[in-house]
Each structure stands twice: as C-alpha cells, then as structure tokens.
Image (cartoon, rainbow, N blue to C red; front, top):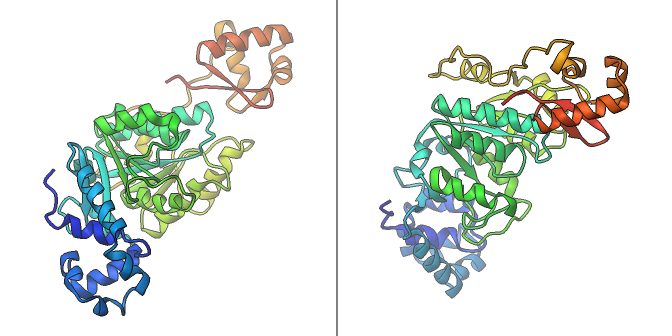
Amino acid sequence: MTQDPGLASWLQLTLTPGLGASALRGLLKQFGLPQEILTRKRGELASFVPSAVLEALDSDGVREAVSRALQWAAHAGHSAITLADDSYPRALLEIPDPPPLLYAVGRAELLQRPCFAIVGSRNASAQGERNAEGFARALSDAGLAIVSGMAVGIDAAAHRGGLAGAASTIAVLGTGVDIVYPRRNAELAREIAARGLLLSEFALGSGPVPHNFPRRNRLISGLSRGCLVVEAALASGSLITARTAVDQGRDVFAIPGSIHSPLSKGCHALIKSGAKLVESADDVLGELAGFRPSGCASTTKVERDADASGDGALLAHMGHDPVDVDSLCLRAGMSAEQVSSELLRLELDGRVTALPGGLYQRLEKG
C-alpha cells in the first residue's frame, strides 16, 4: 500500500504524549493538515495545547517513535491509515470521535466492505461459541466482514466464523497492532493477519491497559452496520459495545437464552430495551438494508427433539436448559450410572457439554 507522503507528520502528532485525539482534531480544524500544523510557530499552537505537549512534540522520544512506526509501515501488509487517506473507513467518519490514525496488518481493503459486529462473553458456553461461529460464517458468506475484539470466547468464535466465510473478519485490538493479547489467541491472530485484518488506533507497543478496551469497543460498533450480542452477563463489556452502537445509530441484535443462565441476562436486558431478538442469520439480514435473507434454514435453529426411545432418548429428556444428573434420572427413569454413561458418550460425540456445578446442556449440531 502506498503511504501518505505526509505520514511522518501524522505520526509526529499522534505519537506526542498528552496530545489526545480530540485536541488533534481541533488543531486539524484550525490549521489544516499535520504538515501545516507543524510549520506553525509553537506560540501559535500554545492556545490549543499545553506547553508540556509542545515541548514533547519536538522531543527525541517522539522522533524515535516516528522512525520506528515508519519502518514498521514499510513492511508488506502493514498500513498506517490517516484521516486524510481515501482508504480510511467511511463508517468511522460518521462517529463523533474517529481516530486520526489507524494501524493495520493484513487486508486493509476489508475496511471498505460492509461490516457487522459480533461480540459477547469471554466466559462463553460451548453453545454460545457455536452460535457465534455459525452466525459469523453465514453473515460473512452474505458479504459482511465480521468485526470483533479478539477476546477469548465469543469474539474468537466470531473471528473463526468470519474467516470461514467469504467476507473474512476484522479484529479491533485494545493494544498496539504488534501485540498479541490474549496470548492464547496467537494462532488466531496469525490467521487473521494472513486472511483478514488486525486493526488498532493505539501506538505500536501499547500494552493491554484496561481503559483502552472501552475505546476499542466504539470502533467495533462504529465500523459496523449492526451489532449482535451472543451471550453476555449484565456487567459484560459487550453491553458497552451495544450501548455505543445505539449511540452511533447502529442496529443492535441479541440472541435469547435460558432464563436460568447468567450469560443470557445481558441479552435479555438488551431485548427488553429494544434490541432485535434473533434466532438465525436471516433474521439479521432481513433488518439490514441491501441484504436479503437466504431463505435457508436457520444457522442456529434448534434441531428437532430426538425420539424418546433408542439412541436419542436422553437428549429428548434434557430439553435445552442446563440440567443435573438427578433431574435426568427422574425424567428418563434411568439409574445414575446409566445417565452418567450416556452423558459421557454424548459428550464425546459433541452432543452434550459439561457445565460448572455438575450441570449438562445439549448442543446443537454444527
């Protein structure tokens, strides 16, 4: 990708400690492009930024950081995208606080495609991860690049589904784009860098500082036509993303779940406050202008109960909520040994998952 000839000026401003994005946008509005800002006498800039920032602007530390960033951007597949670039995502120009500069690794052209966000709990259930991956793949095949935050759980499943579909995935990071966080997603990050896009507004080398992640969330929703919450507790960061999406005028969708599951509480709260309840990717596509439902069976539709006899007998008695062994014994008229043996077989077959507290839950077939 050909870099903006004024990239060094953009980097000098964005890498100056204490010069936040809001103040930088004020300078751009007052003086024009960064090259013009930097030619101004420092006294002219003093009305807009503190003296300590002006001192840092020309410091050795900033010059070294600019040099490192320029060297990084020169590598194939690396991009530093500024507000002045044609490749800057138009969707972010619609939000109140677009970042002046974005660091990207991978297929930067994905920023020009229609996108859709899928987020949810880090401590997701096995079924929640299946739902996230299934929705993501179906929506990716429909032409929507899947955007998420690279966390474990629902985010990672959404990225996997996006990669498996036609439109791929964008991972928006709460660290520098050169930092893999969490480490357990290292292989996924490599796959996204090769076939999707890693994106961050934070400077190279920035670690996982807690306050970075709410800022990251506004970009996840800002890039996207809509946002789907798959599983979320009431205190989940995913609800922050959903609220930000509403503030940005994006559609919000949520998958309902068991009334007994803490991971359903956040989704149910969103639905009560106006989020669209969805059971399939077609439910999402039907709400998005320019996209048509496929007419195919739901990607997450609950399969028909197995016959209450033969191989699927226990599944028929499980229902779809978490259940303990004693309850299954009563429902199925089986001994604890029989139920435990059957649960083990179903778990090995990928039909049932064990949950904390001695509970079990049936899984839909992938």
